[in-house]
Image (cartoon, rainbow, N blue to C red; front, side, top):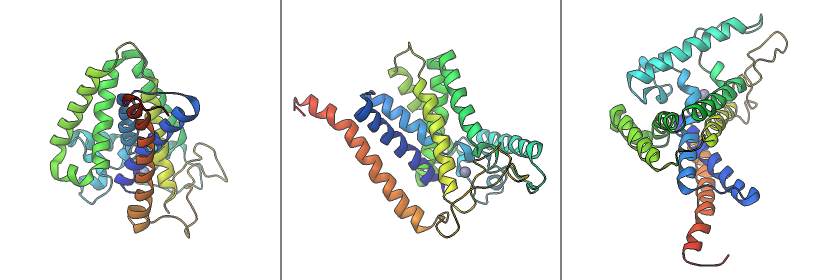
Length: 269
Ligand SMILES: [Zn+2]
């Protein structure tokens, strides 16, 4: 899947999940908390593709996410890709093929998703609002790159960085200071997981079973059968899938906001 679809799927899942929590578990979040969770989940739904470096430096497309913060994110992508490739080689079994690039390996696994979600939660618990502002800045940047890709391309990384910083700062000013923000870690974990599922419905697949060895392979790529797998960038992805995501996201957002609006006008429901 392409960047915008990944980001949109992250936002949709978070909004739909928040609506379900509100509806069925009576778990209510403030509008700011919902907005923050949605942005973080959308950004995190692009995070695993931060392992795509080489292609971007040669300007051959690839994940635009590595361009989010200019050379800084390109450098991070380079490091993440090399670490992923290192882990691939260190854990590969005899039937796993040789690889020259770490894309779609470590960052596309369940252990990575859990680790990143847990790491984010630990950071927020230890440093509170200061951790939150850093994570928000990073994730909002990725989300902007994904959700508004045409705008981000035209605006360039400096503007994207400035807008992310402003949004993170605004959130920081308005968040209560005395809590650990466990929802942010959850949003990061859920976002990464949604990304993996998104890649799984395309032909190339993801090593979702890692590190379970099956038939002398540790890095088996799991995907939908070729017949029903979605072609990256096809109409099914850019029109049908994105259309469905958008409708669900809007319905969930309306469902979350409507009760508060009705209450404001004293309408009994
Ligand atoms: Zn991916």
